[in-house]
Amino acid sequence: MTIEDLFNIGGALPTTPPTPLEVAVAMGVSLALNLLIATIYRRTYRGTRYSQDYVQTLIIIGVVTTILIMVVAGNGAIAFGMFAAFSVIRFRRTLGQSRDLAFVFFAMAIGMVVGARAYPMAVIITLIVGAAIYVLSKTDAFAPRRASHMMTLRMTSDMDFEELLKPLFEEFTDRVNLVSISSAQAGMMTELRYGLQLKIGASTPKLLEALHHVCGNNRVILTPTGNELDV
Image (cartoon, rainbow, N blue to C red; front, side, top):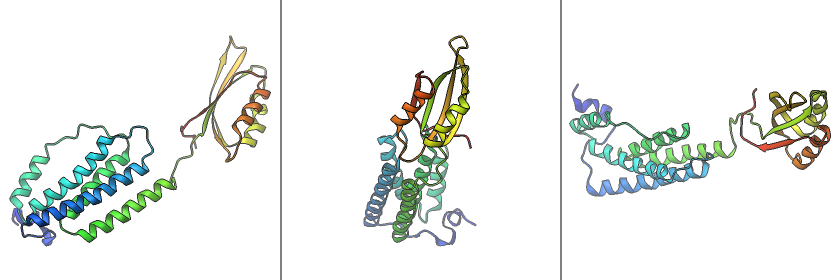
């Protein structure tokens, strides 16, 4: 088996050198599809470290991959040399989320398919995968059970906090997780920290009012958060 056979197994890629017009068309298609991928990434991003530089890099990666695939098509020597050159490249950027890496592979995959001049397949793949990503994101599929609020409150040490707080939790919350218990003010107070998942439509002011009543107007802190509840 020759080097050419290794990089053109089954004639998967066109063996004829692309014309300048074909290269221009492929780059245009790749640019359009990768712009769509970048748009999907932006619309579905939920973190706090959104990077314009990363999104632009996605587009560049997809288009450059298309060019590389078209250049190496049918030329095993160039493909082998390019493979050796890219094997020494290291990515220096730390990706913020696991899905960022998935989008890099998504952009590269589309760039490869376009570079193979399989334009209809590239469009279909982009639309199907993009739609799946959008639906999964908007429906919050496979989301963990999360605490909607973290609550910190103080009660005097002689209070049975479990019995006093139980009716409130049943009325206002779906899930409760006791995070920590500590003493305060030389042992005269007990400080409690809970993770709460409030019921849909639960009134936060009413919950605070009820907590102040139960705790004897001691300090209550209710903070929105995204921490996961223990299952």
